[in-house]
Length: 419
Ligand code: DOR
Image (cartoon, rainbow, N blue to C red; front, side, top):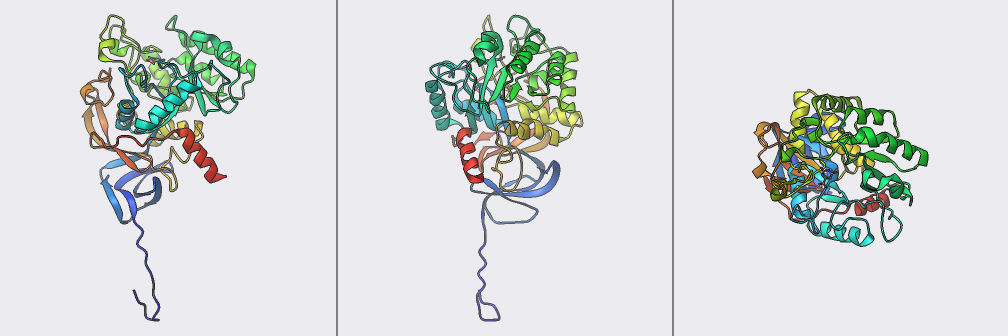
Protein backbone atom coordinates (compact mmCIF):
# COMPACT_ATOMS: atom_id res chain seq x y z
CA UNK A 1 0.00 0.00 0.00
CA UNK A 2 1.53 3.41 -0.88
CA UNK A 3 1.30 6.49 1.35
CA UNK A 4 1.54 10.28 0.38
CA UNK A 5 5.28 10.48 1.10
CA UNK A 6 5.84 7.80 -1.53
CA UNK A 7 6.86 5.22 1.09
CA UNK A 8 5.13 2.00 1.88
CA UNK A 9 3.27 1.00 5.01
CA UNK A 10 2.96 -2.68 5.43
CA UNK A 11 -0.04 -3.70 7.51
CA UNK A 12 0.36 -7.32 8.51
CA UNK A 13 -3.07 -8.70 9.33
CA UNK A 14 -2.66 -10.87 12.45
CA UNK A 15 -4.90 -13.91 12.44
CA UNK A 16 -5.76 -16.24 15.30
CA UNK A 17 -6.40 -19.97 15.37
CA UNK A 18 -9.62 -19.75 17.36
CA UNK A 19 -11.91 -16.99 18.62
CA UNK A 20 -14.57 -17.43 21.28
CA UNK A 21 -16.82 -14.42 20.89
CA UNK A 22 -19.66 -12.65 22.63
CA UNK A 23 -19.42 -14.41 25.98
CA UNK A 24 -19.07 -13.18 29.51
CA UNK A 25 -15.59 -14.21 30.66
CA UNK A 26 -14.34 -14.68 34.20
CA UNK A 27 -11.30 -12.42 34.10
CA UNK A 28 -9.57 -11.27 37.29
CA UNK A 29 -12.45 -12.59 39.37
CA UNK A 30 -15.13 -10.63 37.46
CA UNK A 31 -17.49 -11.59 34.66
CA UNK A 32 -16.73 -9.23 31.77
CA UNK A 33 -18.10 -9.14 28.21
CA UNK A 34 -15.07 -10.00 26.08
CA UNK A 35 -13.83 -12.07 23.15
CA UNK A 36 -10.97 -14.51 23.58
CA UNK A 37 -8.46 -15.01 20.76
CA UNK A 38 -6.25 -18.08 20.79
CA UNK A 39 -3.01 -18.81 18.99
CA UNK A 40 -0.59 -21.73 19.37
CA UNK A 41 -2.50 -23.13 22.33
CA UNK A 42 -2.38 -19.97 24.40
CA UNK A 43 -4.72 -17.07 25.07
CA UNK A 44 -3.25 -14.36 22.82
CA UNK A 45 -5.83 -11.56 23.30
CA UNK A 46 -8.79 -10.87 25.53
CA UNK A 47 -10.59 -7.88 24.00
CA UNK A 48 -13.97 -6.60 22.94
CA UNK A 49 -13.27 -6.33 19.27
CA UNK A 50 -13.61 -8.25 16.05
CA UNK A 51 -10.36 -9.88 14.96
CA UNK A 52 -9.78 -12.47 12.22
CA UNK A 53 -9.55 -16.11 13.27
CA UNK A 54 -9.47 -19.40 11.39
CA UNK A 55 -12.37 -20.68 13.54
CA UNK A 56 -14.89 -19.07 15.86
CA UNK A 57 -17.27 -20.30 18.56
CA UNK A 58 -20.27 -18.11 19.26
CA UNK A 59 -20.57 -17.77 23.04
CA UNK A 60 -23.10 -14.91 23.06
CA UNK A 61 -25.42 -16.45 25.65
CA UNK A 62 -22.71 -18.20 27.61
CA UNK A 63 -20.13 -17.81 30.34
CA UNK A 64 -16.45 -18.66 29.91
CA UNK A 65 -14.58 -20.16 32.86
CA UNK A 66 -11.02 -21.47 33.14
CA UNK A 67 -10.79 -25.17 32.30
CA UNK A 68 -11.25 -27.27 35.44
CA UNK A 69 -8.17 -28.83 37.06
CA UNK A 70 -9.44 -31.98 38.77
CA UNK A 71 -6.93 -33.29 41.32
CA UNK A 72 -8.85 -36.50 41.92
CA UNK A 73 -9.87 -38.89 39.15
CA UNK A 74 -9.57 -42.66 38.72
CA UNK A 75 -8.98 -43.18 35.00
CA UNK A 76 -8.51 -46.92 35.47
CA UNK A 77 -7.32 -48.41 32.10
CA UNK A 78 -4.76 -51.24 32.31
CA UNK A 79 -6.36 -54.31 33.85
CA UNK A 80 -9.30 -52.13 34.96
CA UNK A 81 -10.14 -51.13 31.38
CA UNK A 82 -13.57 -52.76 31.75
CA UNK A 83 -14.41 -49.90 34.11
CA UNK A 84 -12.85 -46.98 32.15
CA UNK A 85 -9.93 -46.22 29.87
CA UNK A 86 -7.83 -43.12 29.38
CA UNK A 87 -9.81 -42.51 26.20
CA UNK A 88 -13.25 -42.78 27.82
CA UNK A 89 -12.28 -41.21 31.13
CA UNK A 90 -10.72 -38.20 29.40
CA UNK A 91 -13.85 -37.87 27.24
CA UNK A 92 -15.94 -37.85 30.42
CA UNK A 93 -13.69 -35.13 31.82
CA UNK A 94 -14.00 -33.07 28.63
CA UNK A 95 -17.80 -33.34 28.90
CA UNK A 96 -17.53 -31.89 32.39
CA UNK A 97 -15.27 -28.97 31.45
CA UNK A 98 -12.19 -30.62 32.96
CA UNK A 99 -9.05 -29.89 30.91
CA UNK A 100 -6.45 -31.26 33.36
CA UNK A 101 -6.85 -34.26 35.66
CA UNK A 102 -4.71 -36.10 38.20
CA UNK A 103 -4.96 -39.89 38.06
CA UNK A 104 -5.02 -41.83 41.33
CA UNK A 105 -2.67 -44.84 41.84
CA UNK A 106 -5.11 -47.56 43.03
CA UNK A 107 -5.01 -49.28 39.67
CA UNK A 108 -4.33 -52.80 38.51
CA UNK A 109 -1.38 -52.92 38.53
CA UNK A 110 -1.02 -50.22 41.20
CA UNK A 111 1.10 -47.24 40.24
CA UNK A 112 3.78 -48.08 42.79
CA UNK A 113 6.73 -48.93 40.55
CA UNK A 114 8.61 -47.00 37.89
CA UNK A 115 7.38 -49.49 35.30
CA UNK A 116 3.75 -49.03 36.22
CA UNK A 117 4.12 -45.23 36.33
CA UNK A 118 5.86 -45.00 32.95
CA UNK A 119 3.43 -47.49 31.44
CA UNK A 120 0.43 -45.40 32.49
CA UNK A 121 2.06 -42.18 31.32
CA UNK A 122 2.70 -43.70 27.89
CA UNK A 123 -0.84 -45.06 27.64
CA UNK A 124 -2.35 -41.73 28.68
CA UNK A 125 -0.18 -39.86 26.17
CA UNK A 126 -1.59 -42.07 23.41
CA UNK A 127 -5.27 -41.47 24.08
CA UNK A 128 -6.07 -38.81 26.66
CA UNK A 129 -8.01 -35.83 25.37
CA UNK A 130 -7.05 -33.78 28.41
CA UNK A 131 -3.76 -32.98 30.09
CA UNK A 132 -2.93 -35.50 32.79
CA UNK A 133 -0.73 -36.18 35.76
CA UNK A 134 -0.26 -39.81 36.78
CA UNK A 135 0.28 -39.98 40.54
CA UNK A 136 2.38 -42.76 42.04
CA UNK A 137 1.45 -44.46 45.29
CA UNK A 138 3.38 -44.70 48.54
CA UNK A 139 4.94 -46.97 49.65
CA UNK A 140 6.79 -47.03 46.33
CA UNK A 141 8.31 -50.38 45.41
CA UNK A 142 11.60 -51.11 43.61
CA UNK A 143 13.36 -47.89 44.39
CA UNK A 144 13.14 -44.47 46.05
CA UNK A 145 9.95 -42.48 45.44
CA UNK A 146 10.44 -40.53 42.17
CA UNK A 147 10.60 -36.75 42.05
CA UNK A 148 7.03 -36.07 40.89
CA UNK A 149 4.58 -33.18 41.46
CA UNK A 150 2.26 -35.29 43.66
CA UNK A 151 1.69 -38.68 45.29
CA UNK A 152 -1.59 -40.35 46.14
CA UNK A 153 -4.30 -40.68 47.12
CA UNK A 154 -2.42 -42.33 49.96
CA UNK A 155 -4.67 -44.78 51.78
CA UNK A 156 -3.76 -44.38 55.44
CA UNK A 157 -5.88 -47.25 56.66
CA UNK A 158 -4.24 -49.75 54.32
CA UNK A 159 -0.64 -49.10 55.32
CA UNK A 160 -0.50 -46.73 58.24
CA UNK A 161 1.44 -43.51 57.79
CA UNK A 162 4.68 -45.16 58.94
CA UNK A 163 4.80 -47.47 55.93
CA UNK A 164 3.80 -44.60 53.67
CA UNK A 165 6.40 -42.16 54.85
CA UNK A 166 9.30 -44.12 56.35
CA UNK A 167 11.04 -43.56 53.01
CA UNK A 168 10.42 -39.81 52.80
CA UNK A 169 9.22 -38.63 49.37
CA UNK A 170 10.89 -35.64 47.64
CA UNK A 171 10.08 -32.66 49.87
CA UNK A 172 8.24 -30.55 47.28
CA UNK A 173 5.85 -33.31 46.17
CA UNK A 174 2.24 -32.75 47.15
CA UNK A 175 0.99 -35.61 49.34
CA UNK A 176 -2.70 -36.37 48.80
CA UNK A 177 -4.20 -38.45 51.64
CA UNK A 178 -7.34 -40.58 51.64
CA UNK A 179 -7.68 -39.95 55.34
CA UNK A 180 -10.31 -42.36 56.56
CA UNK A 181 -10.65 -45.89 57.83
CA UNK A 182 -12.48 -48.60 55.92
CA UNK A 183 -13.51 -50.22 59.20
CA UNK A 184 -16.23 -47.77 60.09
CA UNK A 185 -18.07 -44.88 58.53
CA UNK A 186 -16.50 -42.62 61.15
CA UNK A 187 -13.13 -42.88 59.45
CA UNK A 188 -12.38 -39.18 59.32
CA UNK A 189 -13.16 -38.76 62.98
CA UNK A 190 -10.94 -41.76 63.81
CA UNK A 191 -8.14 -41.42 61.30
CA UNK A 192 -7.69 -37.72 60.51
CA UNK A 193 -6.52 -36.31 63.86
CA UNK A 194 -3.94 -39.12 64.25
CA UNK A 195 -2.73 -38.64 60.69
CA UNK A 196 -2.34 -34.87 61.08
CA UNK A 197 -0.59 -35.28 64.44
CA UNK A 198 1.78 -37.85 62.91
CA UNK A 199 2.55 -35.60 59.95
CA UNK A 200 3.19 -32.73 62.34
CA UNK A 201 5.56 -34.89 64.44
CA UNK A 202 7.49 -35.85 61.31
CA UNK A 203 7.94 -32.17 60.45
CA UNK A 204 7.32 -33.08 56.84
CA UNK A 205 8.30 -30.38 54.33
CA UNK A 206 5.72 -31.68 51.89
CA UNK A 207 2.47 -29.85 51.21
CA UNK A 208 -0.43 -32.05 52.38
CA UNK A 209 -3.82 -32.16 50.67
CA UNK A 210 -6.65 -34.16 52.27
CA UNK A 211 -8.93 -35.86 49.76
CA UNK A 212 -12.75 -35.82 49.87
CA UNK A 213 -13.32 -34.48 53.36
CA UNK A 214 -16.97 -35.37 54.04
CA UNK A 215 -17.83 -34.43 57.65
CA UNK A 216 -18.03 -31.45 59.95
CA UNK A 217 -15.47 -33.19 62.19
CA UNK A 218 -13.12 -33.57 59.23
CA UNK A 219 -13.36 -29.87 58.44
CA UNK A 220 -12.75 -28.98 62.09
CA UNK A 221 -9.59 -31.12 62.02
CA UNK A 222 -8.44 -29.21 58.92
CA UNK A 223 -9.17 -25.88 60.59
CA UNK A 224 -7.06 -27.02 63.57
CA UNK A 225 -4.17 -27.83 61.20
CA UNK A 226 -3.72 -24.82 58.93
CA UNK A 227 -0.74 -26.50 57.32
CA UNK A 228 -2.96 -28.95 55.44
CA UNK A 229 -5.37 -28.13 52.60
CA UNK A 230 -8.45 -30.16 51.77
CA UNK A 231 -10.81 -31.20 49.01
CA UNK A 232 -14.52 -31.87 48.93
CA UNK A 233 -16.49 -33.61 46.19
CA UNK A 234 -19.73 -32.72 44.40
CA UNK A 235 -21.43 -35.86 45.71
CA UNK A 236 -20.66 -35.02 49.34
CA UNK A 237 -21.88 -31.45 48.73
CA UNK A 238 -25.10 -32.39 46.92
CA UNK A 239 -26.27 -35.82 48.13
CA UNK A 240 -27.12 -37.40 51.45
CA UNK A 241 -26.76 -41.02 52.44
CA UNK A 242 -28.92 -43.67 50.76
CA UNK A 243 -27.27 -46.95 51.87
CA UNK A 244 -29.72 -49.21 50.07
CA UNK A 245 -28.89 -47.77 46.63
CA UNK A 246 -25.63 -49.06 45.02
CA UNK A 247 -25.35 -45.86 42.95
CA UNK A 248 -24.94 -43.97 46.22
CA UNK A 249 -22.20 -46.28 47.55
CA UNK A 250 -18.95 -44.38 47.82
CA UNK A 251 -16.02 -44.03 50.15
CA UNK A 252 -16.07 -41.92 52.25
CA UNK A 253 -19.79 -42.63 52.48
CA UNK A 254 -22.42 -39.98 51.80
CA UNK A 255 -23.40 -38.22 54.98
CA UNK A 256 -26.47 -36.66 56.55
CA UNK A 257 -27.62 -33.10 56.05
CA UNK A 258 -25.68 -31.81 59.08
CA UNK A 259 -22.38 -32.69 57.41
CA UNK A 260 -23.55 -31.42 54.02
CA UNK A 261 -24.32 -28.05 55.60
CA UNK A 262 -20.89 -28.04 57.23
CA UNK A 263 -19.19 -28.73 53.87
CA UNK A 264 -20.94 -25.76 52.27
CA UNK A 265 -19.80 -23.65 55.19
CA UNK A 266 -16.26 -24.88 54.52
CA UNK A 267 -16.65 -23.90 50.85
CA UNK A 268 -17.64 -20.34 51.72
CA UNK A 269 -15.31 -19.72 54.67
CA UNK A 270 -12.14 -20.84 52.87
CA UNK A 271 -11.52 -24.06 54.82
CA UNK A 272 -12.03 -25.99 51.57
CA UNK A 273 -9.29 -25.39 48.99
CA UNK A 274 -10.41 -27.54 46.06
CA UNK A 275 -13.43 -29.37 44.72
CA UNK A 276 -12.47 -32.60 42.98
CA UNK A 277 -14.74 -35.11 41.28
CA UNK A 278 -13.24 -38.34 42.72
CA UNK A 279 -14.40 -39.79 39.41
CA UNK A 280 -14.53 -43.50 40.32
CA UNK A 281 -16.18 -45.50 37.53
CA UNK A 282 -17.31 -49.11 37.87
CA UNK A 283 -19.10 -51.21 35.29
CA UNK A 284 -22.88 -51.42 35.41
CA UNK A 285 -22.58 -55.16 36.07
CA UNK A 286 -20.36 -54.49 39.10
CA UNK A 287 -22.71 -51.83 40.44
CA UNK A 288 -25.70 -54.17 39.95
CA UNK A 289 -23.92 -57.13 41.57
CA UNK A 290 -24.58 -58.48 45.02
CA UNK A 291 -21.54 -56.66 46.35
CA UNK A 292 -21.45 -53.32 44.48
CA UNK A 293 -18.10 -51.48 44.70
CA UNK A 294 -17.85 -47.96 46.05
CA UNK A 295 -17.48 -45.11 43.59
CA UNK A 296 -19.39 -42.41 41.65
CA UNK A 297 -18.38 -41.34 38.10
CA UNK A 298 -18.40 -37.63 38.91
CA UNK A 299 -16.28 -36.04 36.15
CA UNK A 300 -18.90 -35.45 33.43
CA UNK A 301 -21.49 -34.00 35.80
CA UNK A 302 -19.22 -31.98 38.09
CA UNK A 303 -19.47 -28.57 36.42
CA UNK A 304 -23.18 -28.57 35.49
CA UNK A 305 -24.07 -29.61 39.05
CA UNK A 306 -21.72 -27.15 40.78
CA UNK A 307 -22.68 -24.30 38.42
CA UNK A 308 -26.32 -24.96 39.32
CA UNK A 309 -25.66 -25.20 43.06
CA UNK A 310 -23.59 -22.00 43.13
CA UNK A 311 -26.30 -20.09 41.23
CA UNK A 312 -29.03 -21.38 43.55
CA UNK A 313 -26.96 -20.48 46.63
CA UNK A 314 -26.05 -17.14 45.08
CA UNK A 315 -22.36 -17.92 45.42
CA UNK A 316 -19.99 -16.15 43.04
CA UNK A 317 -18.70 -18.06 40.01
CA UNK A 318 -15.30 -16.60 40.88
CA UNK A 319 -15.37 -18.81 44.00
CA UNK A 320 -16.35 -21.83 41.89
CA UNK A 321 -13.44 -21.18 39.52
CA UNK A 322 -11.06 -20.68 42.45
CA UNK A 323 -12.01 -24.07 43.91
CA UNK A 324 -12.12 -26.05 40.68
CA UNK A 325 -9.37 -24.38 38.63
CA UNK A 326 -7.11 -21.79 40.29
CA UNK A 327 -6.38 -23.50 43.60
CA UNK A 328 -5.80 -26.98 42.11
CA UNK A 329 -3.52 -25.40 39.49
CA UNK A 330 -1.58 -23.60 42.24
CA UNK A 331 -1.14 -26.83 44.21
CA UNK A 332 0.46 -28.42 41.12
CA UNK A 333 2.64 -25.37 40.36
CA UNK A 334 0.68 -24.76 37.13
CA UNK A 335 -0.90 -21.39 37.94
CA UNK A 336 -1.36 -19.03 36.07
CA UNK A 337 -0.50 -21.07 32.98
CA UNK A 338 -3.54 -23.09 34.00
CA UNK A 339 -6.41 -22.03 36.23
CA UNK A 340 -6.92 -18.52 34.82
CA UNK A 341 -8.35 -16.75 31.76
CA UNK A 342 -5.37 -14.48 31.17
CA UNK A 343 -3.33 -13.40 28.13
CA UNK A 344 -0.36 -15.75 27.91
CA UNK A 345 -2.05 -18.57 29.82
CA UNK A 346 -2.78 -21.90 28.19
CA UNK A 347 -6.08 -21.70 26.33
CA UNK A 348 -7.86 -24.05 28.73
CA UNK A 349 -11.47 -22.98 29.08
CA UNK A 350 -15.05 -24.14 29.28
CA UNK A 351 -18.10 -22.44 27.75
CA UNK A 352 -21.21 -22.85 29.91
CA UNK A 353 -24.67 -21.82 28.72
CA UNK A 354 -27.22 -20.81 31.36
CA UNK A 355 -30.21 -23.01 30.53
CA UNK A 356 -32.48 -25.54 32.15
CA UNK A 357 -31.33 -29.13 31.64
CA UNK A 358 -31.18 -32.55 33.22
CA UNK A 359 -28.45 -35.07 33.94
CA UNK A 360 -29.17 -38.25 31.94
CA UNK A 361 -26.97 -41.28 32.65
CA UNK A 362 -27.24 -42.49 29.07
CA UNK A 363 -25.74 -39.21 27.80
CA UNK A 364 -22.52 -39.55 29.79
CA UNK A 365 -19.25 -40.37 28.00
CA UNK A 366 -17.88 -42.39 30.89
CA UNK A 367 -18.12 -46.17 30.52
CA UNK A 368 -19.86 -46.16 33.91
CA UNK A 369 -23.25 -45.02 32.67
CA UNK A 370 -24.72 -45.08 36.18
CA UNK A 371 -24.85 -41.97 38.31
CA UNK A 372 -26.81 -41.08 41.44
CA UNK A 373 -27.46 -37.73 39.74
CA UNK A 374 -29.59 -39.26 36.97
CA UNK A 375 -32.60 -36.98 36.43
CA UNK A 376 -31.17 -34.07 38.43
CA UNK A 377 -32.16 -30.67 37.01
CA UNK A 378 -29.34 -28.31 36.07
CA UNK A 379 -29.20 -24.59 35.25
CA UNK A 380 -26.02 -24.71 33.19
CA UNK A 381 -24.84 -26.83 30.26
CA UNK A 382 -21.28 -27.29 29.07
CA UNK A 383 -21.34 -26.12 25.46
CA UNK A 384 -17.63 -26.38 24.68
CA UNK A 385 -14.40 -27.42 26.34
CA UNK A 386 -11.07 -26.17 24.98
CA UNK A 387 -7.76 -27.73 26.05
CA UNK A 388 -4.68 -25.66 25.16
CA UNK A 389 -6.50 -24.20 22.17
CA UNK A 390 -8.01 -27.46 20.83
CA UNK A 391 -11.78 -27.82 20.99
CA UNK A 392 -12.17 -31.25 22.64
CA UNK A 393 -15.92 -31.08 23.36
CA UNK A 394 -18.58 -29.16 21.42
CA UNK A 395 -22.39 -29.35 21.57
CA UNK A 396 -22.57 -32.79 23.19
CA UNK A 397 -19.87 -34.30 20.99
CA UNK A 398 -16.28 -35.31 21.74
CA UNK A 399 -14.26 -33.56 19.02
CA UNK A 400 -10.77 -34.85 19.73
CA UNK A 401 -9.17 -38.27 19.79
CA UNK A 402 -6.22 -37.35 22.00
CA UNK A 403 -3.61 -34.62 22.30
CA UNK A 404 -3.53 -34.46 26.09
CA UNK A 405 -0.06 -33.92 27.52
CA UNK A 406 1.72 -35.02 30.67
CA UNK A 407 1.67 -32.22 33.25
CA UNK A 408 5.26 -33.15 34.12
CA UNK A 409 6.33 -32.13 30.60
CA UNK A 410 4.28 -28.92 30.73
CA UNK A 411 5.85 -27.97 34.07
CA UNK A 412 9.31 -28.54 32.64
CA UNK A 413 8.53 -26.27 29.67
CA UNK A 414 7.10 -23.60 31.96
CA UNK A 415 10.19 -23.69 34.17
CA UNK A 416 12.46 -23.42 31.11
CA UNK A 417 10.39 -20.54 29.69
CA UNK A 418 10.38 -18.67 32.98
CA UNK A 419 14.04 -19.41 33.79
O1 DOR B 1 -15.63 -44.67 46.50
C1 DOR B 1 -14.43 -44.76 46.22
N1 DOR B 1 -14.03 -45.38 45.11
N2 DOR B 1 -13.51 -44.22 47.05
C2 DOR B 1 -12.17 -44.43 46.90
O2 DOR B 1 -11.39 -43.96 47.71
C3 DOR B 1 -11.70 -45.26 45.79
C4 DOR B 1 -12.66 -45.22 44.67
C5 DOR B 1 -12.36 -46.26 43.61
O3 DOR B 1 -11.20 -46.31 43.17
O4 DOR B 1 -13.29 -46.95 43.19
